[in-house]
Image (cartoon, rainbow, N blue to C red; front, side, top):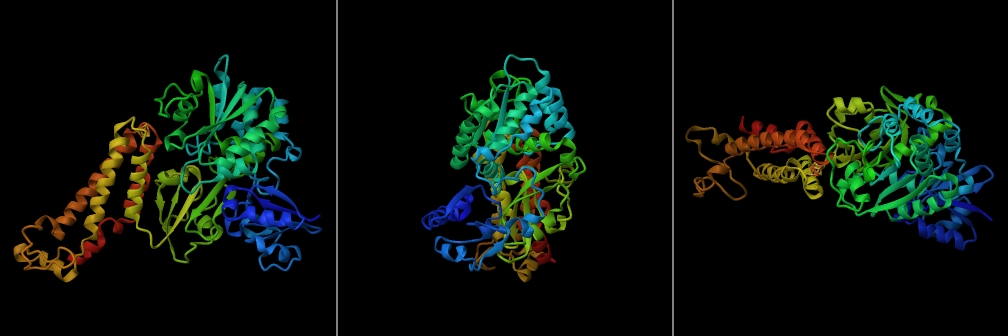
Length: 538
Ligand code: SF4
């Protein structure tokens, strides 16, 4: 019987992989459902087991079974791991994703957990510290230091909490890992439990991820005897963005409305139910089995500066090769977008990329030399965040993207602090005024008249001309005044961003200024056309 491998990752299913799997089963094949390899342009992907190894075909449909089985299909890819998109990767965390049946516990070796349990807890924490692993959720805080604090805090009960509330647009690595290799995350959490003395853990997953929830629940059941006495359970979040903030997430698990807590006390000292708690992102915990199995040095050997190890980068938006690309830190932004991503799907020039989700900075191609590194991005006014890259072509309107950031913050704000709750709404209004002023046409010749004696007004908008008797009524909409009003609004917007950045309690209010200010700094022509208006007036 021919064996074929087909992804059941949510993205692959959305592209039709279930129908393809059913067609192969009807044709008498043994169908193994895997996670996704991570390149969505070739999904639905089928890999046929042959004497030369697994041969991939994609994208394919349910009518392609016969052509695939006789090897004549036009989308024959050969060995998938040899494709440039995969051959360039360093898959430490995602090594099994897309390759193995996620729930085949017999094929999972638990080498990291076995190694950890043969070591004293302090030695495990030391290994994580030596690896240089930093929190992959966005903050980049050293994971080993966090674990050390929990280990050093005496308590009758401690917890491990996995933040799987992946809510950033353009990010999907947590979901892919949970659907494609759940045992890797479970093993990482069990190692953390041994390292700090915690007996129970929670995986907090947003309700928009039903496949991940189901896969994790089934995997936890299968793995119970492997990780005992450590125990685990899944908690489902209702989808509030703020519950991705670690203290709001703890409140949510406790059954309360998710609201950000003031720090101190740190969750490592007083976290879930008031007990010392390790709270890490999916990717941080899933990196740990490799560190324990292969050694901290093997992990730390890869990377750039203080950013050690690999990062599963998610490339999305208007891009040819969207997907997950795991690579050591240090690769440049330009390589990720142009070489790995292949440029835009529309074929138009790349104008901007947003790195780090909806709260990340927009970067123009002139910044593509930046190495993927926490410090390099911070110095350039950006952040790596959860390593999502969203690509835009030259048709993007950056003022509208800035507005989207403020609107996102207004919708998702938990309302606890004023700069975020009120500032985001005032930010939307201010950008709306800038966009409205920008939309009023100023013909160069007529605009020149504005500067002339008498200050006569020349252009007010479609159909309105000098002598129409509207000068007095629309005096406040003079291009000259609009220019001044726009400058005032931009100044106001920048002040507002400063207030939000330094006066907000958590990252939602504090990081919303990143996309707004970067759009203002790098694409000023989209905010009322300062260069265009000034040129027109000259
Ligand atoms: S910054 Fe916004 S989301 Fe965060 S605590 Fe303040 S109001 Fe809530």
